[in-house]
Length: 162
Image 1 (tube, rainbow, N blue to C red):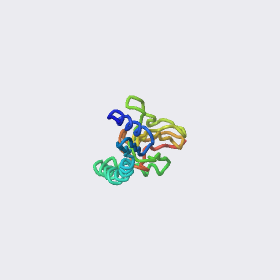
Image 2 (image 1 turned 30 degrees about the vertical axis):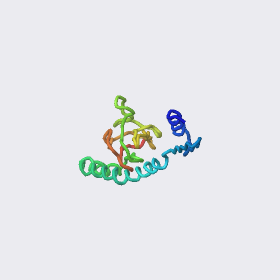
Image 3 (image 1 turned 180 degrees about the vertical axis):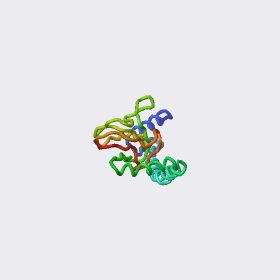
Image 4 (image 1 turned 90 degrees about the vertical axis):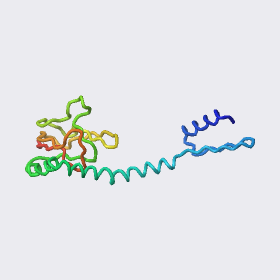
């Protein structure tokens, strides 16, 4: 068996679901194994290590540095209690008001929105999730800055129900 044949076997094993291939031929012995287990261990270890250790402290540090912004939702809470409904973030991620930088915002202050209408996008782990309104009404205030990190249950919009 020559080097070219060995390379072709390695390519075939990598493309297939074969975990291990052993060939014995006239005193020649070769075993080709895929490296699936170490890769799986890295993948499973990364999310558990990244989320508690990196994402939460960074978000906490961001809030500490941006205390005026962190105080704004607290200032609007009394107004929200009167007649306004808050649309909150259903996940941790990056908040975007539009589908692309050159596109218009999904909603602006004063816009009438319908139930099921897309109000923003939250990017989490390279996935762009469209966030839909659960109520019908008029947008009173946008509470999150475009392209900023948001946390779970963080207020994004204040809406006056119709």
